[in-house]
Image 1: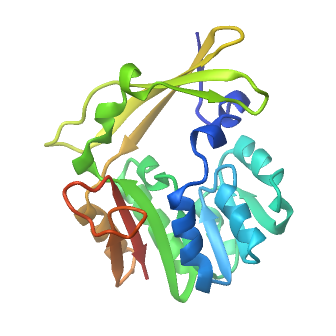
Image 2: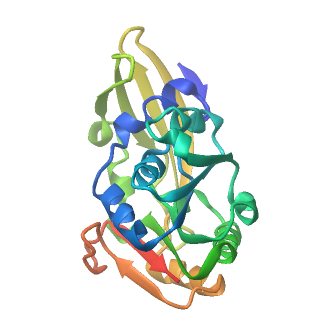
Length: 248
């Protein structure tokens, strides 16, 4: 078994689209962009949404810290229409004013400390035109998604771009303490069928409540927030698996 840093290992990055195909979240963000001229996709990953928007004629900037992710993004159809930047929110002052800035795929949860997420939200606010919007999603802690991060519940078999079958599963380390900061650490394992080799990558995510996210958005200067509990724009309730914020 080998250990890997998530999204720096080309074999893991090559599986990203198979594990995270276009879905209702892609359609949700594409609809939000309908009145936008310039869209910034912060944490764009392999560029699925960015290239979809570029195909529709929007000016799109995709930003991601993973060189391997961006390598795939640049090779997508319409990838030549997107401005790609290897970096993070510190690049925002250099991309030009945006009408819409999105952080998809639960990117907000990788910011373990409130100060780090707040700094990103402030940078996003400054990057938006007057009236511009930020939109992002975060798993609702009330749904306790981490309960499914066990080998038995999370096992998936996907076909890589080269045709190989890969088994993927998560293994949660410890359930979060409800009386403490909700940080969940887990390991994702990948077994490659041809060689039976297993490579693993450790991750940690922060689960914030709607109130916690709203407070950070307010501190960052966003005065109005619309909340949705799923991609069909249902309101947030106790059963919602998502916390989707659209703020201006």
